[in-house]
Length: 208
Image 1 (cartoon, one colour):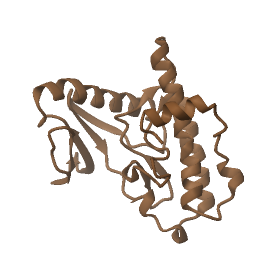
Image 2: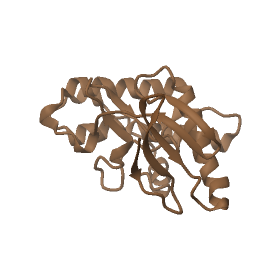
Image 3: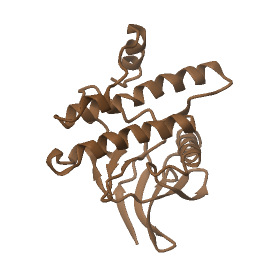
Image 4: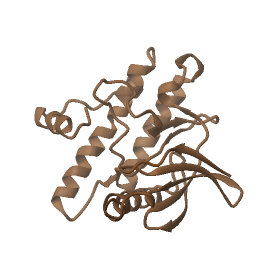
């Protein structure tokens, strides 16, 4: 079985729904890209995704890494569910969603991983919808860790970027509160009282 979820493009990975030992899985690969892109962006993106999934392997909020056939390809557990942006607020237990959001952020922080792509986008909407999934058993799952970075590092620039993107991840709470009105705001109190310089840097990075 192989179903194309994202057609191959010269500057981004192909994404296919496949079977891995009889279990549905997602295969993400840069093998079709040019040799330069494959060995630079592709190798780095796959390495970062595999690193993050390995650090978070005990969390219920991320898929499992199933296989890494080569440096440009990863096979990841398929997560059934609905993208958060497409989720009807009337059909979800908002208190459960709030609790799951807190739990996801706690797992990321404990693992030392900043996702970097689950906060607000430019329009303060749900943004990158495919990065957050609400599963049938009421679990909030984050996917696509290709842009993840460590929160802690011996190299100051990497550590600073990790802390910045970790702060950005917490905007997930404001994003959910914006999309699901009537939710208990005390559970989703976003830590947004940051210095102006921090907001400006997030805008420069295209994260706001």
